[in-house]
Length: 55
Length: 393
Image (cartoon, rainbow over all chains, first blue to last red; front, side):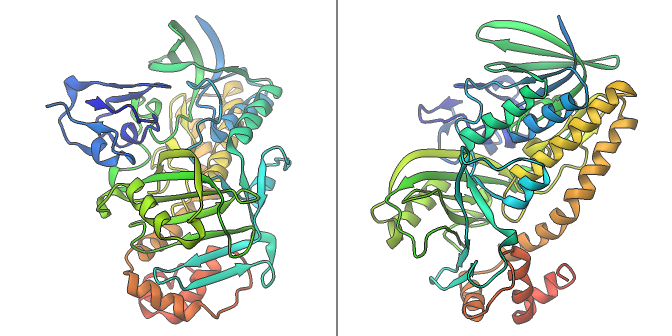
């Protein structure tokens, strides 16, 4: 996952992740990409479009 | 390894309330927060009912009250407004707008003064269930440390991991998680001072736009939407709303806030052996207004009280069920009705909202409350009376 530099670490993505794969630290997000099923729920939920899928 | 009775993860108002009441009850408490500054950045519109604070026994302080609110103004898409102000109604249901950065710290200080130990800048990276307790793994500025506790209280917000690691379901399903954006702005013009505004309709699908005054020309201007009902991002909806509003034509943002609001009601399972969940992590949010400070702090208070008692008696789920009972008695009847009202309001088209607005515009109200407005809506709308009639007495 690409986290844009305007992310404010609000945690909305982590809150909606159905597999609990996103850890919100104070100033960073840690994704467990290995277990991600690409459901894109987090990308759609971000209030400020700060997440982008890695191609 | 550091051993303690109770660990509270997350020092928002719910977590601090839990830590305070657990410490007051005689338990040894550690309150942890990942942030370097408790209360910042805020993820909240900051308006709370004064009655709620009083019920929690919190003395109002000018240090964290930005503005006392004198009433509400509800607007429909064509600009029709419904006023509920103190000139005409009983003010007992009035609100105030907080300065969360100060309020949250003040609540954490209350917990500390009651005897809780506070660990800021401490991230919980994992938990492990052990016999009669939990091991809590943490990281603080590169230093890893394990803690052992008998009772774990998860107050880590809508994104919280702790409850989910313990096998309890998260607060909101993705389709119930409100997505919120807000600016704190100055140069805001008001029709009347000290009135909080709520704008409904296609300006915020599945939610509303709020303008909550913070004194002088300052206000929180924000919105919450339900993403799957929306066509744009919340920020685009908010920027569009601001561009069209005559009251905000000179307004300048000095702060941007974002965050999720679990608007789907309280989680089914709030506890298990040695663990309780409170606040937004437990969906303790008014599903109609999205307000979570008071419900979260009530949840925290009961969890803290039960934790202190459990330490002396029994930390199993059999005993912790008491927390569930106490908090549901206080919050559930509200959330149940409000959820249906929420579904009803968000099912209305702009035209239907305008019609309601026209019918209610000249009405007068006895009290400032959502319930009061609903009673009137049911009187004039057959659709509303069909869907909501049994909820409002």
